[in-house]
Every structure is written in C-alpha cells, then in structure tokens.
Amino acid sequence: MRGKGDTLIITSTCDSLARQVISLTEELTRIRNETGEEVEEPPPQVVHEPTGWQWFQIWIGRLAVAALLLILIKRRLKRT
Image (tube, rainbow, N blue to C red; front, top):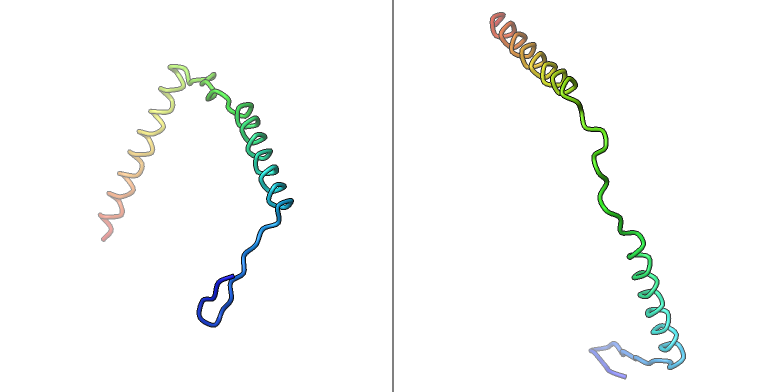
C-alpha cells in the first residue's frame, strides 16, 4: 500500500488469477503464431497482362483524352 497525496494506491495479486492470465497469454501467443504461419501466402502473380493490341488501345485512348483536353482549354482561352 502506498500513499500519494490524499490518494491511497493499493496493489495486490491473486496467484490463481495471475497464473490464469499467464496461461491464457501464452496460449494466445501460440495460436497467433500458428495462424500467422498459415495465413502467409505468396503475392498473387499477374495472370492476364494486356496484350500488345490492348496496350496500343490504352495509349491511343490516353493520347485522345489529352488532345481533347488541350482543344477544350484552347477554346476556353479564346473566348476570354
């Protein structure tokens, strides 16, 4: 028992509860380690990478959007 100002601090342990806490903590650690080993999986591999034709379409689409944006910006600046 300790006194701190006007407060009394009382600490105690119960051996059976302390043993139970230690036992459950060890069991939790063991289970966590076992499930951690099972959960680890290698990263997925890329199975369906775009073909050459699909990359061509993707880049043409990007260029078309960029050109459209430039045209719209140019028209907007001409009006003002």
